[in-house]
Length: 266
Image 1 (tube, rainbow, N blue to C red):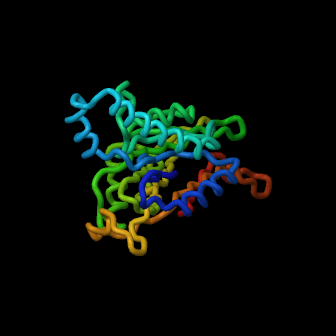
Image 2 (image 1 turned 180 degrees about the vertical axis):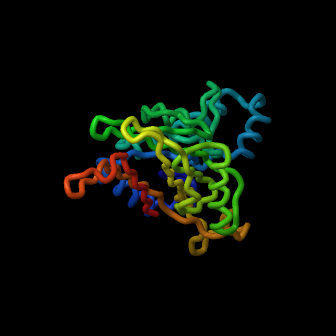
Image 3 (image 1 turned 45 degrees about the horizontal axis):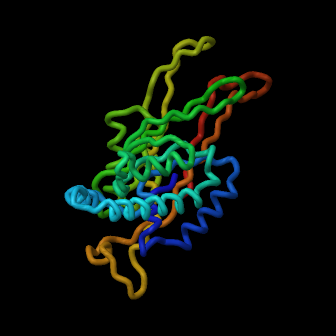
């Protein structure tokens, strides 16, 4: 999971981004989920300003702006092209450009990478094939809303997503924090054709997906410094999923149900 890249910002953490791109390329068995804000321009406020003056723009000027934004999308697509075929999809952030065609820059990036454009919020099911049986993993992803000064408040906002949806993992970006924490497990009943009705539990996780926008650099000023915001947690979040089925002890099957283990690297 990666997001809040802000690739065209003067404060983009280019070294960390390039290091992680090299790492992503090395993971041949990995799948990727984009969490929004791939480019820095344009923010919600900037889109509102452009909307107010768009009718007054000369056609040449309007085309120049759109050409600049398309060039930024092409740059981003070139850097992520190795993910093609392994991108679960791209979440829409709050930093994106709206083209005259009605498409936004995140939609165009998704088209360039031949993956799903997921909008600002998506409930995703991933199937894993194991021993002729499909095992599912559900992710509830949202770019994010609001912000908390401390990590506890930030991850609590993500945990609240479980109040209205059933999923294994809830993930947000937006506030540039990077953390994964287990939340309250969910108990449920499952019917097995061999063993009948059994009590099961679903382990759940709340995740903030990190950022690549550096807040503080020697001798540089930016809006994060001016607002005395904390430094961003640079990098991505990696989810490792492992399935095991059955456990033979003394020739007898101890457990017939598939067991799933989820771990995170931050």
